[in-house]
Amino acid sequence: MSIEDAKKHIEDLASKDTLKISINKGRKKIVRYEGKIGDIYPQVFTLHISNDKHINMLSCSYCDVICGQIQFK
Image 1 (tube, rainbow, N blue to C red):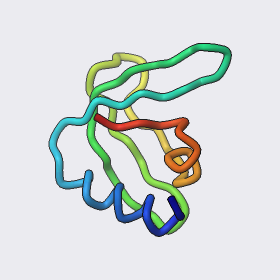
Image 2: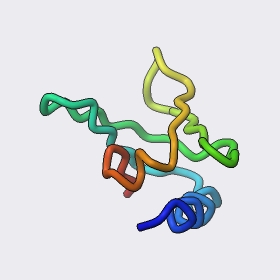
Image 3: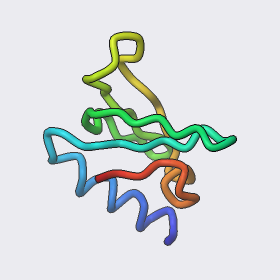
Image 4: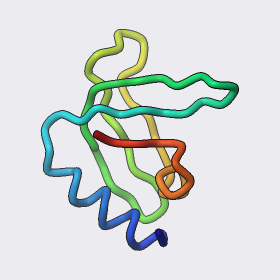
């Protein structure tokens, strides 16, 4: 997968209302959120988290999607 493919994948998912997001934090720690894709920029995109009272928004790079650090369902 290239960066252009990852950008296209994120743009396709931006139209969905609710996504299940899995983020690999390392050392067998996987955090799961529900939310949607907010803003899309040339190098990063934002995730608006709806099911966590401590985190409202995360910023992620397209490399995280390519490497499998972030997965969407």
